[in-house]
Length: 361
Ligand SMILES: *[C@@H]1O[C@H](CO)[C@@H](O)[C@H](O)[C@H]1NC(C)=O
Ligand SMILES: *[C@@H]1O[C@H](CO)[C@@H](O)[C@H](O)[C@H]1NC(C)=O
Image (cartoon, rainbow, N blue to C red; front, side):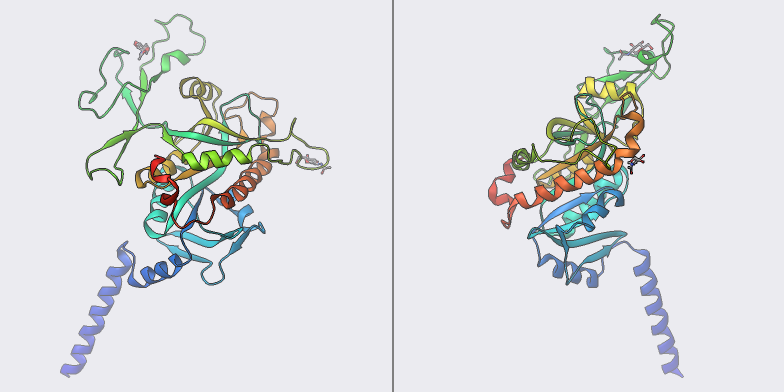
C-alpha cells in the first residue's frame, strides 16, 4: 500500500513540476541544447524584419537558402529561421509592430545566437520630399522620437522641465508646441493650447561596455560605420519602376544613403507632423522599429544597418499620395532586394570585432 501512495506522490510532484515549467518564462535545458547546435553554423548576420509582408519575399527568393538541418527554431513566441544568403550564414526573426517588439526581439537574437552584425529592413513613411515612393533609404543615424516630457500649461522655453535638474530629462533636443498648430487662429493669445508642449528626450541606455545600473543617454544612434560605407556600393543599383506594363513610377527608384531616420510608437498619417519631423530632426524615413533595433545593437556593441524603402508620404500631399497602395508591393520588394545584395558584402569573417566594428559605436 505504501508503494502505491509513494507512486501517487511522485506522480503529483512530476505534475506540479511540469506545471511550474509551463508557467515560467525561462529557457529549458532542451532548448539550450538546440540553441548550442544551431550556433555551430554561426557567426550569423542577424536579419531583423518587422512583418510577414517584408519577410515573405525573402523566403520566396532563390537568394535565401534555408538550413537543411535546422530551418527554424521557436523560442518564447518568436521563430528564428536559419539559412544562408550567397554563402553568408544568417538567422532571421520577425519582430511585429513597434518599438517594444523590435527591441525585445533584437535582444533575444543577440542573447541567444552568435550574431556578428544586424541588418534590418522594411517599408517606411517618407518625410523627405526630394525622394519618391519606392526609393530605398539607408540612414546613418536613428533616433527614437516618442519619448517625451510633456510640459505643464503656463510653462515655456525658459522653464526647467519637471525632473530636469536630476538629469532625467533635458531641453536639448527641442519641442513641439501644440498652439502652433491651431487651425484658423492667427492671434497667438487666442490659439493658446492647454496641451502646451512636448519636449523630445534621449533614451536611457545601459551599454555592455559601461557600468550596470549607471545610465547613459542616447538620442542619435549611429549605424555601423563599416556597414554604412559598404552600403555606398548599392547606390546606383537598378530597381524596377513599373507594377505592370502600364502603371509606373515617374522615375526608377533609387538606393540612397541619408543622414537620419526617425522611429516612434506612432503610425504617422499627418502632413504637419511629418514636416515638423523633417524640419526639427532632418528625418527621411519615419517608421516604428529601427531606433529600437539600433538602441539594442548599440548597447550590445554589435554593428547594425537599416534599409528602409519609402512606401508613402506619411500624411499625403504628393501626386502619388493616393496611389501608395498601388506601389506598396514594389516598395517592400525593393527593401528586400537591396538587403539581399547587402548581406553578401559583409564577408565571411568570424567576428566583426576583428575588422574594427568595436570602434563603430
Ligand atoms: C507654447 O505655447 C504656449 C501658448 O499656448 C506658450 O505659453 C508657451 O510659452 C509655449 N511653449 C514653448 C516651449 O514655446
Ligand atoms: C496595372 O496595375 C494597375 C494598378 O494595380 C491596375 O489598375 C491596372 O489595371 C494594371 N494594368 C494591367 C494592364 O494589368
